[in-house]
Length: 187
Figure 1 (cartoon, rainbow, N blue to C red):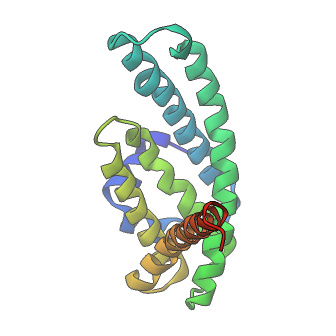
Figure 2 (figure 1 turned 135 degrees about the vertical axis):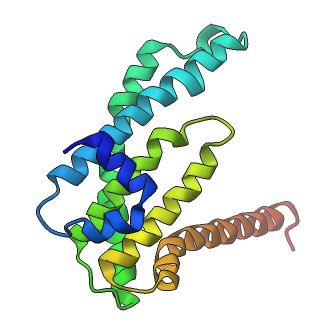
Figure 3 (figure 1 turned 180 degrees about the vertical axis):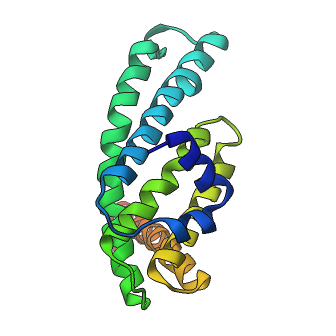
C-alpha cells in the first residue's frame, strides 16, 4: 500500500477511488491506512493543537502538554480509531441494509477506513471543521458506491446516527430539567 498515493486519490477523486476500491479482500490494507491516518493525526494534534500552541501563547504549569503527551496521543488515537471504525461500520451497515443497500459489512469497514484520510488535515485549528465536513462527504460517497444506493439515501444513512444522538441528548436535558423542577418546586 502506497499511503501517499492512496491518500491523494481518496481526497482528490473519492468517487473514482471508491468505484475502484475492492469491497472484499480482507481488512489489512484499509485498516493499515486508517491506523496510519490516526497515528499522524494523533501526533500532529498532540504536538501542534495542544502542545506547541500552549507554549507559544504563554500557558504553562501543570496543564502544558509536551512531547510525551503527543506520543501518547499518537499511540492511543489508532487504537481508539480502529475500534470506532468497526463500531461505526456495524451501525452504518444496518442502516444501509434498512435503506435497501446491497453492500457488505467488510465493504463498509473499507470505505470508512479510507475516509480517515481527512484526519491528516482535520486537526488544523480554526479550519479543521471544513475537513470534517469533507469527511462526511467521503462517507456519503463511499456508502453510495459500496451499497449501490442513491446519494440521498447514503446521506440519510450517514447523518441519521448524529440526528438520533442529538434527539437523545435533547430528551435527556428536558427530562433532567423536568426532574430538577419537580425537586425544587414539589407540588
